[in-house]
Image (cartoon, rainbow, N blue to C red):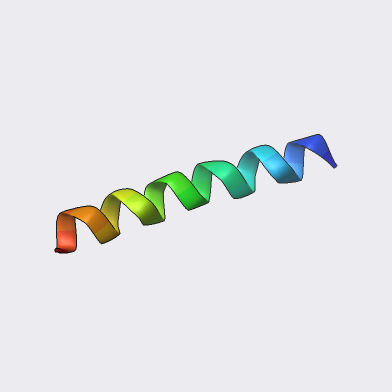
Length: 23
């Protein structure tokens, strides 16, 4: 389970970066 959470957080951080750069 912790591995899934780590992957989710990593994906979330990447999505956040793309969202910020897209603004």
